[in-house]
Amino acid sequence: PTDEDMAEGAAFPPGSVHLPHRVENEWLKQFVAEQLVTVRTKRGFARLEWQKLRERNEALDCRVYARAAAWIAGADRWTAEKWQDLEDQLGAAPTDTDPAGQINRPGQAPQGKRRSDWLGRRGGWL
Image (cartoon, rainbow, N blue to C red; front, side, top):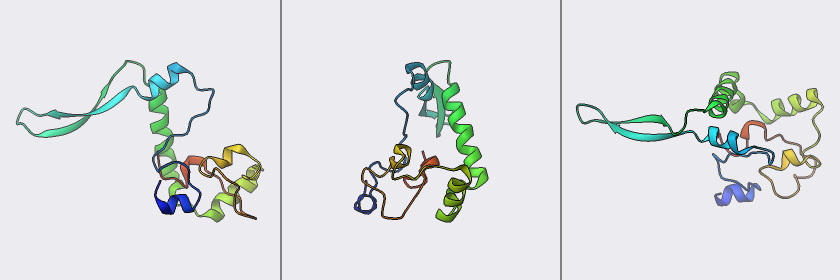
């Protein structure tokens, strides 16, 4: 993390993927089932292409679809007030008492503040 990120309490750099402890090995293998490689065309030009490392990649596909849906919904442009309104509607626990809200903040949340880290809002997109 940058000094700015650390000053804000970020523990993980933008682009980090946070996974629950209960994730099974098969799911992890599916999640990393493709790699980006540079291939040459017949004319010698380089282009990037995703290639499968294994046949099953449903976990990766689900992640890509979920990220696309979040982008279409505009979640990466929502204000703190919008997130607070959604938390209130859902009856979400305050982030200072709910460990799920502490993903990017190892210490206590600022006094009187509640914030959700759903979809990696603070740390950049995955």
